[in-house]
Every structure is written in structure tokens, then in C-alpha cells.
Length: 609
View 1: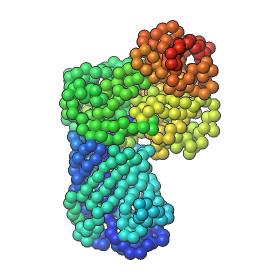
View 2 (view 1 turned 90 degrees about the horizontal axis):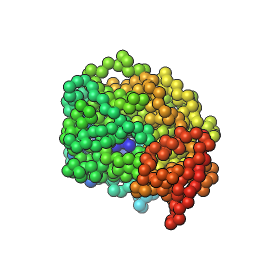
View 3 (view 1 turned 120 degrees about the vertical axis):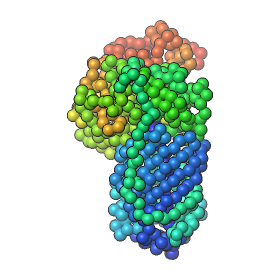
View 4 (view 1 turned 90 degrees about the vertical axis):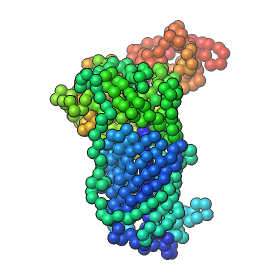
């Protein structure tokens, strides 16, 4: 899952003269009408925030010549910052940790933001951007001149200028897989320049809308470069009692890591996910007496969303390691318990990994947290650098001879998933024609669809993974529809290695580990089923042409027994493993019912990819 705080750019534009017919004319008219912007160096504004069930304040500093910026925010129980220094994006997350944000779409979004803040489109070469006229459009009785703008190093966005006033009235751009529409209004003069005092943002669902109101603004002399650079922060909220590292055992269910933790002293078993954040479910929050604030949009695998709140946790303990006074997300992760086949009261994610060097030994089933100041990488393995994309980490990797940025995700059950845009761009279906299509995963956004096949080689640094199981995503929304992402490297790949993650230095180390079973296997029945109460598994997807369909199983059927054993005594994740690993030709008898009648159905396993 992914969770970022977006602080929106301001626009500074004034009413102008007659309708302009070309991009150059539209922007020239805009510049002429903009008043006293020439010669100004920096702009500081304070803003009031309201949205997503929270209120707050934002303090923003912009270099109006270069577009470098630094924004500090306090929203609900969380505070943090983000910025762009002209080369790198950066973020100070609500836990206080600072990271350089140069991965995926985060850097591209910062470049877009910077471009608009400095009004680089006024320059003779449009500030290096490609700008196309998208014609005049009418919405709500108002006409707009629309330009499609692609800044150098950024992503394209649409700028809507009011055809009468020539004010920038709207910006429409993709952020990840969300279409974000920002509406600007209530322009007022500040030292001879006009600035929009009100900004409204919509991500597609009105319940997540955000409003930002400017409360003060002042132009300043030129600011030092350090004002826009990532702050240096020394974290003092994490410790390891009695030593420099601590290890805990974990269980691997559905290729997911589950280990014991204590939250405010209470014991739980949490999932550990490098693609996620520290979170508790509403049920866990209630049991711990924690107050949740806000209603943000949470997304991940699958095209749907979940509501996210925020709360404060006094302590998180993992073995002998303790982190104090943290902001946790509150998200109904327990809705996935029926998909996982095990309780899911919470998650350990980015904020924890950021404070330690984390080692995952899949072969021996241990997770070790190491004091970063005491970490010696000498025996950790081969170094693979990564970049941050929000709370996720990405490496440069090559699949089928094509390079791209791939998320490294211990929270993904798959081996390798290729994003739908990357598949289309590189015509990967043609290169991998033999396989099956169906539900291959499930995230907070619901089911994920993909074409599964035996793939080409994946190269990560000096490592070459031969012929992994590859899922060519067909998702229309969610993480695997992100056009800035090549794909996702999951635990099916990672469990070949001892994986050491040094978030402080943005390096992953890989070292061949103890041999582990269940590598690069894939379901031989052609079924996706979830728990349906304690006494049944419900079939939610049947692969066309697979053994399950041939045997007559259908979506909606309830499995009540497997080979005569009641489902109440069968772990869902163990059955999934069996259907992957039992030899082709093995017959599995399912007792199923649909309505009142029950029947036995024999499914003979065979390779599908």
C-alpha cells in the first residue's frame, strides 16, 4: 500500500486581455497580465488546510526563479515536510524520518510542482517543456483554453485557463493511478502580483476532497539553497536493549512475513511489509484505546480504496527493539483476514525499517533488526542501490531485456508482477504467449488480475533470476496500473536470498540463502478462494480452461471439505501451497455446495504455465 501527504502548488496568475489562439499566445497573455512578478526572488505563504476529516496548517517557501520549494505541514495528529531542491525530491514523514524521494512518480510530481510554482512556461523555450494546444473546452458554462504541458523530467498535465480572464483555473494530472483535479480561485493582489487564495483538490472521490486557503503571503529576498534542501534529522526514538541487534522468528504465510510484536505493551502478530506503513486496524485501535483521526484515501494492489485514519502509538516493540511515540495509520486491514487465512491486526512497515538495518533470512525464518551505526555490510552480500517512492523502495532492474524501476516488496505474495503499462509499452504478451489469466493476488484495493506465465530472466544488479513465474498485470487501477512503474518484485523472488535493507544509505544487500521449498510454483488447479466463515472456502475466481473449470467448479461454490477433511481443520494458506506444489496428476477431492445440495468434485492438478 501506499500513503503520502500531498501539499499542493500555488498559482500566481492575473486577469488578461483577449483570447489567445496558440500556446505561446495564451502564455504570453498570461505573463503580461500577471503584474509584478519579474524581479521577485522568493515567496512565503501560510495556508489553512481542511479535508479528509482533518484540519491543519501549511507553511510554504518557494524560489520563484527556479521553482525549488520546501513545505512544512501539521495536519491532524501528523506533522512533516516535503520539498524539491532543484534536483532531488525529499520528504520528512510524520514519524520524523527524512528520505530523498527520487523514485517512481514522486520526483516527476515534484518537477511538475516546481515548474508551475516558477511559472517556467513564461520563458522563451517554455522552460524546456513540451506544450501542446488541447483546444477550447466548456465546462459549467465557462470556456477554457486548455494546454497539455510536459515539463522536462516530469509528467504531462493539463492546464485550464479561463478564456475570459486568462487565470489558471484548473490543473488535471495523474498522480500514480489517480486523476487529481486542482481548482484555483479567489485571486487577490500581493505586492503587485495576483495569487490564488483558494485551492480545491479532488482525487476522484468527493469524500477525500481537500481545501487549502491562503492566510498570509509575502515576497522575500533570495533565499539560500539550504532553505530548500532536505533537513538533517537525528532520530532518537528507536533503541535495541542489551545489544546492537535483535532477532525474531517469523512464519511465512502466502509468502507474507508474520512475526510477534507488542503495541503499547499488548502482544500481536503483525505482517511485515516493505511496501506498507506502520498501521493498526480499527479493531486493534479500539482495543488499545487509541483515537483515530481523519479519512484519507488508501490504495495499493487492486483498483479499489480503503479509508485511512491516523493515531498515535506510544511504543512498538519487536524483540528487544523499541520505537516510541509514533504516528500509525488506522486501516481496516483485517478485511483481508479471510483472504490471508490468518488474523491481520496490524502491519510493520516503512517507519520501522527506516530506523534499523533490517535482515530477512527466509530460509531460516528469522527477521533481524540492526543498529545502523553498528552495521557492517562486509558479509551482507552484493549491494543493490534503491530509491524511495513515497514509503516504497525501488531498484533498477531488467526484464526481457528492458530496464525499468521495480518495487521491492516483502508484502507481495507473487514472484514478479509486471505493471500493465509496462506490459503494453513493451508488448510483453507477445513475448510470453503461453499462460493463463485470472485473479492472482489481493490487496487493499481488492483482487488483482494478471496473465501468469513462465517468464524471461529478471536481472537485479549482478543477480540473474532464470525463468521466474511472471504475472503480466491486466489491472486498470491500483499500483500495477501505475505508468511510472515497471513492476513489483515480491517474496517469490526475494526468498531465494538473505535480504538486508539499509534504508539510511538506500542500499539492499542480497546473499544466497538456505534452500527453500515452493520456489517459482504456480497454482495447478485454477482457483482463487477465500475463507467464508469458519466452515467454508468460497470460490471467487475460476480460471478458464483449468482443471477446476473442467471439473465443474464455479464462482460462488463453497468448499466445505478437502479430501474428506472439513475446512474447519484446513489452513487456507496451506491448501493454496498444496495446490501449487502437489505433482501434476494428483487428484484433489473438494466437497462443495451451492445453495443447499453438496457434492464431491475431483480436480486433477496440471501445470497451467
